[in-house]
Image (cartoon, rainbow, N blue to C red; front, top):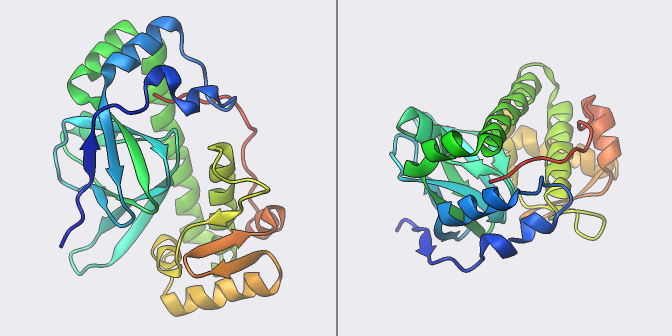
Length: 251
């Protein structure tokens, strides 16, 4: 039986949103905060494995990740899956469906996921009356394009070990920037199947590749994910470094 996400009334006010107190995120002006608070319609709670958005569906809402991990993916007719990217707190999902009428990919909860729900019909009002927030949405879309460029480079040109190292370094950096990973919590909650579906490798090849990284002391594999022990070592193998830390927007 399919697992359905559950929409709830607003439990976390935009005025008390924990993301607003993180130095990583751009502060709202008073007018922007009032608009976003009126824009929000509730929260969506999803258990791990729940499909939050379905490719081809039309949604009346946009969502911002408040807590947890999720991922975007597409599925071929024969059932093969390609994971496109991962989402963490502060990321927006559903914008594609709002602009292009229907979703071009699906989104699934990787861990317990809480999403802020926004009314799509008020999106034009955001651009019309709040140029700063409109720029923020443009920035979020441009950053997603930049991330997908790097993912495509990884799948197309990096070796299996470089791909795996890049993915782990990338996810650790994203989790750290979102405040859900750090020195006290290095656990990236993705399985070997998630790795395989992201990297374009067989599960056997993925297992061998991750074992090599574990043997070098870069990661510690666990039942539902792995601990990133040496993110700098992973970056060195991948030939990739994160961009400079900067204040970023969210809605």
